[in-house]
Image (cartoon, rainbow, N blue to C red; front, top):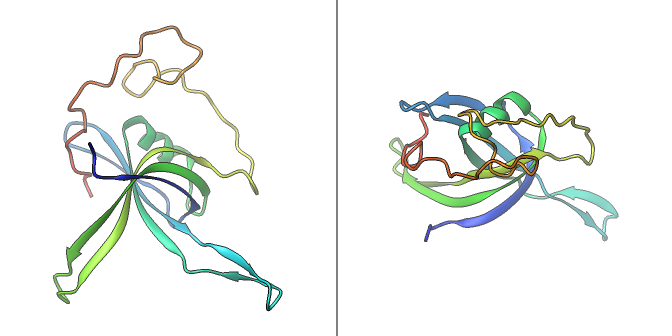
Length: 155
């Protein structure tokens, strides 16, 4: 069992996704999503901004490459993934710091105030048929174990 919690986040990319590759060749995209909640204050009859939350996101393999090609800085997205809190001691101040890290499993543009054109990809970056492709009759072989599974992102 993994020590993580599923999460769905709606927010904006704070910068363009950064795409790199591990020594074994697995693609990794890193980016940050900011969630800025708004609420209606009945007493003042106005909309108010809540406290923003920032999520450090990592995506792997074909998803990472598609994110880097498709989502620019500022894009409003909906993402699903697994969240973990990471804690460390700051080398300069000695203070304990933490961040929310999300391993992204799925992501797409949020279409309330935007339009998107979807281009279906028939093959993954490694040449296999996409595992959730409903238009194919090919087998659904899993990605070989160890391909990027235990590697740290190269950042």
